[in-house]
View (cartoon, one colour):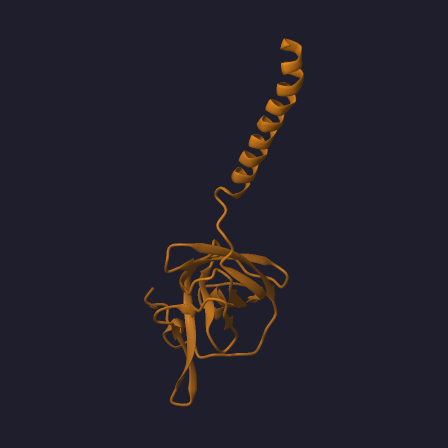
Amino acid sequence: MKNTFSLIAGPAIVGLLLAGCASNEQADATDGQAAEIFTVEDPWIKATEESLDETSDDTMTGAFVHLTNVSGEDQTVVGAKSEIAEVVELHEVIDDGGASVMQEKPGGFPVAAEEAYELNPGEDHIMLMELADEISPGDPVEITLELENGESQTIEFIAKEYVGAQENYGDLDDAEHDH
């Protein structure tokens, strides 16, 4: 009788133990991973000139992407950061008496649930200033979007040459720009 119990119960216990291990592995695989907030399309950053010096406007650049909010909740991008820039701001381009002027966007970028929000040259974009190094075409640059609710999402942008959207940088041209 003892042997019959071992033959029946043994495989059942092993099966339960293996099932428990598989469940733990699945739980471990999702621990620490945030759910995707945005899907991204065409993330790119404007490449800078070959030399960066303190008198050049090339110590700043813009990043652009088309975001779609897949989180199921309204989101607001309130900030951004990148290791390649000392200062990263969310910007908009406004009409200032017939001239396009770039400025920091009050309130950030609101992205409704299941809706798209486009960051394009000459419109809303991410501005990277006081760059640590030049950005050449093809270089990957990571930028982390910071959300109002404390969550974040890092996106890899690919640098490309772009000569359009020559906005007026207004007070950003001044070395005394307030951060």
